[in-house]
Length: 567
Image (spheres, rainbow, N blue to C red):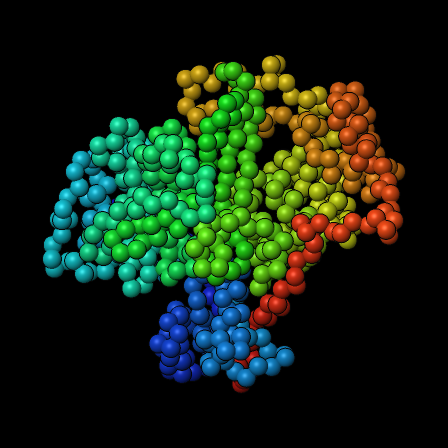
């Protein structure tokens, strides 16, 4: 079963400390009572406080981000919450819980039956076995499958591209294990399918019913059937109990969908979907998805990244990544909806939740979208954690020598959050002066005829085309890619006599010659905005209205009396 162990995707963990007791027996008794009463997982963390003695901290929950555990623990510990009976009486000087992040994961378990069935169904193409070859005496023996176990990966399959991870889903009462395997009998030799088995080795089938809330997905499947599926993640992304699968589906004409599949009896049913990639004239899209924490609510979200490739004949002219975060709302019956950064700021633990949202967008590769999210949130609802993250992003981009992206991040933040301009001034100057001193900096627009990213893509694998294009983009350093907000905030907001204003003025002069239309558009933005009269003052746009103030996040908890322990 080491082949299963080696393919388990890694995971992290966070829990909420709600009590700390100096007696181990009392802590064990309370932990058992919480488990039996609420059904929540409880771990006892031992803290040796030296002269203060040893304390036993009851840490409840098992979540994969701070925002997620804060959201749940806030409800658990509120008046009427499931953990309220186990807490000390509320005090204005005592917090209700403390979050602990752990760099390890508890063992995830499957059974010999399920593990062998999973491997049997993905080991070779051909008809599926009706019963897995399992010794009856071993059928119920639990096998610990620990994330990150340093075992060699299984040997590559010649008929399936890549080695596919093993994922866990389902509920505690019915745990399931899943992976990707070959699609027997498919016309395309590289086609794959989702393989999900339960503890008895029963294979679950995918229900062909369409996902709710995605009309474009329904149309795509009506025009061309799904011929291949691949598991890309798993997590609790739906309000129903248990974890779901995130699956990439590909139709016969090359359209790709990202679907959330949930186990329901012997079937896997779609609970939501997003159109991931579709071919159009002159444009090719490639997409991917991942289960993330993106808005601080009880459920996890789906980060969707799309890679847009623009062609002119056989030449690749443009490459751009767009990322979004999607999640369920209400009871989840309407499918997936796009998550908005300002709405996230109003969630419980909003500051930490926004950090998760921006981190998810960054990880998906859309740095400009992450920068815009920083500016929108900090311009409306500034928070300490988000401020630190967004300023840190600029320095990280500088350290990676992503100079244009660093200028865009700093400029967008300075324009969008005027109250933070003093804090942004240093990183903005460092980013602009470093870019200004780069000998590669060009003011000319990129022309695909003379400077394509890839001159001829004919016969090249898609991955090789993308790799070549990204390498070429790293060599390009141009004012054409600097966003307007960087010019505006440097020249207008900081002023033309400041160091950043002087750099912006030099750049504008270069644009006047090489890109006159772009220069004129930026100059128009630099004009003072006239004050509207009271009779014609427009109502503020809904998109820019401040989000509702969230309930204050719970502060960390201390050890109970006698002597207080550290946080």
